[in-house]
Image (tube, rainbow, N blue to C red):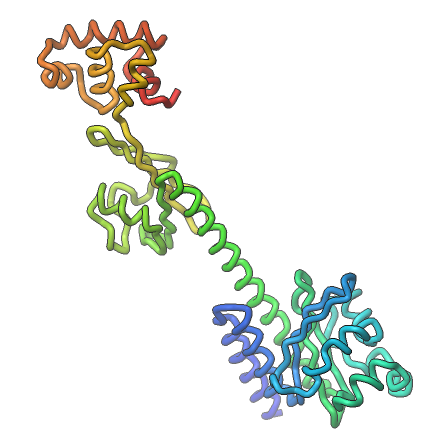
Length: 334
């Protein structure tokens, strides 16, 4: 009974290690080696199986297992494997052994036994599936004795942990690829991405986001968001003469902030194409950069009333009724 308790503690420690694995390659090596030690077997293999295509990839432990040299032979005979039909039909089923599905006499009549199992001293085998996309059965091989009930129970206990760890790594990898793609797409347009870990803390920032944080908030190296962005919902814009920063909160898990810096100074050529005079262009440029009528007048050395008259002409030429619409047309945003 004490041995069972010891094995259970080892199994749980092994599962905890699997959940910390940074990649599928590390998880595979940990599980192959750990199952070998815990269950007491001669060799273990991850079998990435595509039966319709007749393709089989095996990553074995130990690496120098003799059958590694004959994997093309195993691939050619895989449809004779007595366990394959069962795990394909019931991938969620319990670990299964040769003795569960076929007699010793019938197994030994098969070519896969004569040409592959027997030469490599694979007399007993237990298989379980932990992933169906891709389809990955784990095969545990022994030459001296069949698997005990206790060993089956240990493997049954560990299988969901292996599947969960595998899916977690896959989802983490997919999330990293999505984030990288999002960054590339935004940064081609001059934008930046911030990934949040909660409570205003920054988990990741793209290079463009780092520059924008420094330029607008002097916060390039801080692990926390600038106060103006903490708890942001929707979007918020920040303006300086000639420039605007727009920050959009994306309600994902984890949450994202998308940053985009744009010019708020209209292109003079565009203003001419819109039919505005030089002075009207100067006035609407002042509007687009956030100046008041008084500010525009002071900058152009004209009265506030003259600014307003120029704006009336601008509104008529652009077909708009207010300052915001005039600025948007001048900047090409409408």
